[in-house]
Every structure is written in C-alpha cells, then in structure tokens.
Image (cartoon, rainbow, N blue to C red; front, side, top):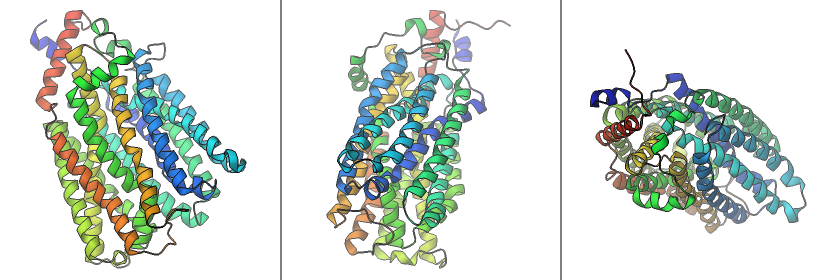
Length: 490
C-alpha cells in the first residue's frame, strides 16, 4: 500500500458525542473520590477511630489500590468477549462502588468498637477493587476511542469541564449547603451526599458505556494478529524500557500528590475555615473560578491540538508554579482574614486571581494525562508490538497511587505534630502561628515544589507532536501489511 493510502487510513476517529459520553466514566469514579475526601470525618467523628489510625489506614488503602491496578490491567488486556474488552469492567466496578459506600457508612459505626476498624478496612478494600475496575478503563480505552492527534486531546476538554463542575460544584454543595443544613459532618450530611453521588455516578457510567460501545471491538485492539503475547511478568520490562511512560508517571504523580494535599478536606478547612476564617468562602471562590478555569482548559486543549500535548503540559506547569509561589509570599505578608467577599480589597482580588491561575493551570497536566497515556501505549505498540493499554494505564495508576497514598498520612501527621492528635482541625478552631505555617506548606508550598520537579522532568519527554505522527504512521503501516487495514474502494 502506498504511503498516502496508509496515511489516509491510519486514524481511527470518534464522533464528538462518543468522546463526551466516554469522558463521563472518569467523572463517575471521581464522584466517589470526592465523597471519600470527607471519609476522615466519618471515620474519626462518627465511627470513633483515632486520627492517626485513620490517616494510616487511608494511606495503606491507597497503596492497596495501587497493588490491585496491575492485576486488573492485566485482566483487561486478556479480556475479549461478547460485551467487549472494557465495558464489563465499567459496569462491575460501578456496582461495587455503590454497594460498598452504602455498607461502609451505614454499618461501621453500629458495630462493636472492637471490630469497627477491621470492618472499615475490609469494606474499603472491596471498594478499592471496584474503583480500580472502572478507573483502569478510563486510561486503557483511550487507545480504541480515537488515535487522531487532533481528536485525542478533546477528551481533556470534556474531562476538564466535568471535573471542574464536579469538584467546584461539590465543594459549594458541601460547604455552602450541607454544612449549613446539617451543622457539621454528621450522618445526615453523609447520607444526603452519598445518595446523590451514587445516583449520578450510575447515570454517568451508563452514558460512558454507550459512548464506547461502537469502539469496544477487536478491530480496534492494537495490531491484532501481530500483537506480541504478553505475560504478567512483562510489567517490569515495559516500565523499564518505555522511557516516555516512566517520565510521564513521575511528572504527573508528583503533581497529583501536591493537589491531593491541596484538595484534602482537612486542608480546605484549614485554609478557608481557619486561615481565612470563612469556610463557606471556599464554595464561593470555587463558583467564581468556574468560568476562568474552563477557559484555561479550552486554551490548553487548543494548544495541545496545535502544538502537541507536551508543550501544553509544560506551559501550564510553569504558569501554575508562578501562581503558587506568589500565594506563599502573599500569605506570609498579610492576615488571611483580610480576604473576604464583603471586603473586596486588593488582598481579596489578588487571592482570587492567583488561586484561579494556580488551580486552573495546575489541573491541566492531570487533565491531559489520560490521552497522553494513550500516546505512550501507542508508542509501546509501535516499538515492541505489544497492545497492552490496560497494563500501561495501570502501571501509571500503580505508581501514582503509591505516591499519592502519602497525602492522608502527610496531613494526619502534620496536624498531629501541632497538637491535633485526637481530632482533625475544624472550622471552630482558632488560628495559631503553627497552624498558619502548616497550612501554607500543605496548600501552597508542596504544590510549588511538585510543579518544579514535574516541569524539569517533562522538558525531556520524547513524545512531542512530530514523534506521535511518526508513531501512528508506523502502526498504520504494520496494520496494512498484516492485512488488518483494508483499502477503501471508490
């Protein structure tokens, strides 16, 4: 087949609504991530587990989450049935997530104290298995959804919009509505929050399954007959030899750890509820930043489509770093209580601008990571012949979760060091010099350090726009030679 014929057929394109629907799979699992940001308050305040114990358990469960990833990813790559490779894992995962949340929050605190911790760990572990089943598909199925470099970044547009609405709207819902309605993090609040999340997540999963249905077929699975047989022990050689994967994992993982700390429910309470003195302001600020954050996401995706995802990733990283450094300097010089919507002075306006830039550009790397993992998977296929999107995606998740598992423990031990050993800081606690320093470090200092590391690593990332064009042409040529691609007639 001629080069022109190969180039005309090398791209598997998706309809725009298919990309939009499938992106809801990530939103469906992020709903559970969001509601579990507050699980520390249930575990310590209602189930009666100690703060340090809760932090240690959550860290351990995050590590367990990482361990399950390669196993599930391997199973995804080996699956090929009537309902496709990916869709069964989406459905099974979501059902498991819903069931475990219902049991966790409605049974744990009713049990004898001697068995509460064991029961909490057991149900949480089952929840994690369900979470892994569904999240592994978000990364792995990118390879069948589309391989067009102009289309692939579009996933980030939908994902960015959905996540902005979810985390922003969710924070407003909790801080400005549920807390006012229920007074504190109590059973009434958790019941209302969890019920809404379970219903929305189920609806999103159904839509995501519909969006992927036309693509979850064998003809889109790698090189078909030429695909190299892969065994579980091949995880290490893949990670060791796939340099772009290793760099992407390292860069995004440190970013995610930093933003896991910043978004941690306790850190949000410390920043807005104690340092600034108005927890409801977290919801207000989130609402104000929705439109600018979405505009930043649109800009980043447009840049990615034009110049490649690497350049968009790096530009966003450096802008976010500057904003976080500025926030550190700002809070070292001013009294946080000067920030108030009833007092729209320089401090309030400056905080809103810097916080918007930091969060908006800071989330771009995480938004781009799913289509970038698909690029890395295609790189693996072109170099080794292996079609292993499940293994590639879960290798990323495994290391990602091992590192980000430190977030609850870092928060727990940080607040324990300044005296909060039996309960986490709440909106009723007074600001102390020690609490101010710890809040600034957790909310702004660690993110600034993480972005510096991430930017330096990604500056050496190999898969720029030109390289990805070469890779897709190579895969298309191999498919054509194997007879998988048929020339169109007429």
